[in-house]
Length: 409
Image (cartoon, rainbow, N blue to C red; front, top):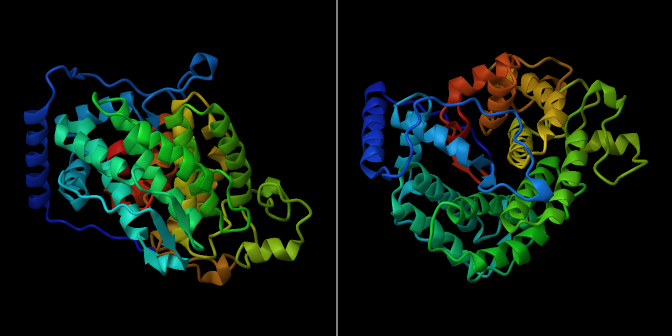
């Protein structure tokens, strides 16, 4: 499937009206026991780990404190959250009558050709997560019911993923699906998650946690995002630790720093790889400088996918008291600030991808990374900030969705 960046241009009057309507609807549906938030504390860079290796819930990408801050900002009409929420609520993914399209076997070839359930599963995952967010941000039980309906439908029939893109399909569908399950499980009474647990444990986790050594790196980063999210949902410490270990190796092998030497780091578990094989794997890029990714010269879109998935893993780890952000920050900041000027239209230098990188496809918006690195840590990322501000609000596809709502700043 070709990755494209959608630029949203809307009439100011329409945006204002949409925001007003959305905020009014939220206030009408507000649960009476929801506390008001007059002041919003700044989130710590990393939360304290719970004793005994326990997991914090909800704790996949977004936590309870994050949601409380977002609710307060939306209720007060604060931007960019209010407009981003109105956009999310107004999409087809926000329709509480969404009907899932599950199947036992999902077959996905290269670029989802053939597509036997690929788009259906991915879209149902995004819809489930959207509904779970809307439930948590509005208190409208129709959205909780919709999220449960979607997750349970797939949990009742899904058996496996096949063909070349099967592992990636499983991962990018599991990512939003498990976020939805995590949010609903810890905010809504009356749902039995047993079938969902079985699906994530027996179908999705085995297809994601093993990684994909010599595929392009965004595959494995998305797979580790799926695996860490599922491990949190299942309270599975062993799988969480295994996925984090693989993630650490993949980030080092995905973003180059001069401290790596004259060649990039080989994929996790690989040693003694010939130089020419590594250069070929990096799509022919021989002039390696801080921030170049393994997929930069493939296209900026896939590089953006890899960086986004890495930021999601670090954000989930932060909620669990593990500071992966400090480990990946040098590579993440270098990569973002290298790519952003060219994604914004600046001509690329001759040394980068022979001066002709595919810059138009960069996606998704790096909201989660910018939020942590700039808002929490106070780092200066001018290119990243400019790019995010130009193309807000973030949209939804595959494994990413609505990050201006959850991580705007």
